[in-house]
Image 1: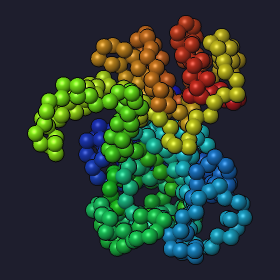
Image 2: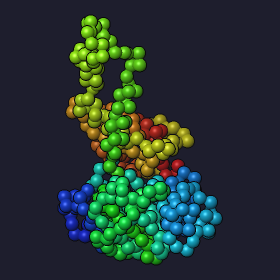
Image 3: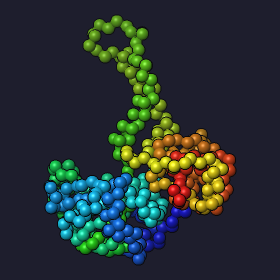
Image 4: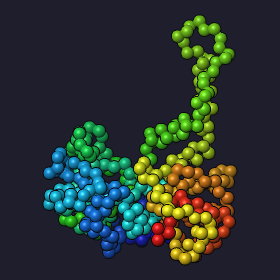
Length: 391
């Protein structure tokens, strides 16, 4: 089930106060947001993950590389870490929630934010002086100190294109002016909204855990929306003007021609329902190159019920994105990795449970182990959205 938000998370602020006064607006430092926090991975374990296939990782070399601020992409051979200098480098591993269960569960502390906004949990390690430089991001992020100490400096003025050093692998700012500064120790958390420039430097062996929430890019949304209409368009349909009148000026785009074109464009269905259903598909699609792993063997409802009775637990895949809403006509729409499932409204409590939690004990699913509900669970298993611990 979803973990409760610890009372210390916002240093005495309620969730409502945080969302009203800080979310997407201004930074917030919280001392001991996670009291006694112990990072689930060591620096050596993080480096080991960066060497594995299927794990997205980078090494950032501020200096001592082939060029300043060099970014290398994994997977890395193990000997790469034995050849690193003593200082001024960082290793970052994306989507740690897919590889370490504790990081998946860490996300549940932020369950008051819609899951479709969630990006991933990134973990970085740096020795003393390690940094990825002064920069700004376009997402909301909670930076949790997991090991050692990191000095964070911020400036709330977002950098423009002219503020960046050209021809680098990273978007590093040319000049840095500190507006506020803090040193974080394990358990401390710094929230940063989009556009706030920040500069973090390790003061000793340092691990930082970043829980990031993405905001869809408007241009990307419009491109995807348009592409879906293009895919659905009839390639055998052409502009038609069988009612053409003689035209004295052949260089003019006539009023009648413009009216025909406007009619073609306005025939596109831009109803609220069409936009909502497109967004459900768009926001649950896997990132390019991040396909959901499928089970070795598909199960029917009866087989899934037997396995659940035997193993006692189903888990929602961190590779899978799911979201739902109820359409104005009362239809229950579930979106799974970019696909729409139209379901009986009687399944709404089960769908809410599946989309909000990460683990499902057999006793929690007991009311749903027959009929359409059981078939839905089997379908989600076969899509890779749900899996058993043994898998």
